[in-house]
Length: 335
Image 1 (tube, helix red, strand yellow):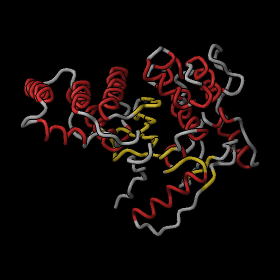
Image 2: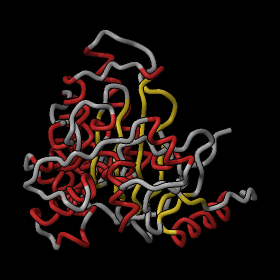
Image 3: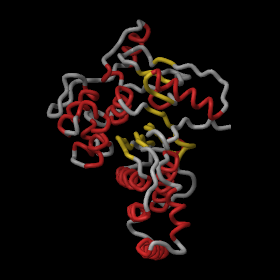
Image 4: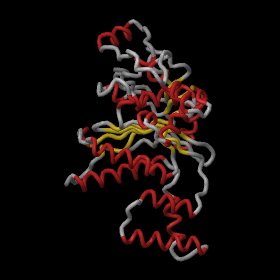
């Protein structure tokens, strides 16, 4: 039996999720052309669903997105139609005819098609599960159609971590996501990897810049140059700046990491973020102890779960500040 996903009811509060999905059997089949399509679909589906992408990264066999789901509000018919056109820029003849009828009925104040269509569209808005399902289905359909492939493309359901939507937990998660191509040695600076949110922001994409600015909102003051400099510090440490080359930050070697862990020592946060830290993708909830405890209590209330899952600290190898997690790693936590 599947464990229910920990989610926030967005009728009263926004929510941020770190979502991850992998290809079936870990097949490394997402080449550059496919990455370009998936990158475009991430923004397209996010705009349709009314969620904000804070950052993302697409690798050969998986992708990560950091998604902010706003407080639910009623979306008007004209806005629904605009979003529908974003989702279907090249509609089939039947869909184009439907869009035409709906558009006319919106102008007339009602009609036989509008009520059912409105209900169907609103059901897909403002929910991380709907967003991820649509994104994965759309990409799998494109991939199978263009590559002469059939069958399941994605492995199991997507994983998600509920992240506190401000402060250190949010900034560390975003940096951890953007550092994926650095972690596997593809680039030394994520600005040079086209298929991540930070690189798109540096290239000038407005929606990507808005996402990075939201991550470091308290340090940016709504100015991109300040946001860029603040985010570089999360990626490369206190000496990094927006106009500077990447510093010589590197992940510790396995032997060095083992030694530090054995001696209960610490490493600079940028170095640790270049390792795989399981809690960022398996932790269920990530944030301050008050945030994690509150959502654990709510989860128990909603699901009737009696299991006393403890709030756990992150591996004591870096200065995580007040950030804790709901679920500890079952296997090696960092590597």
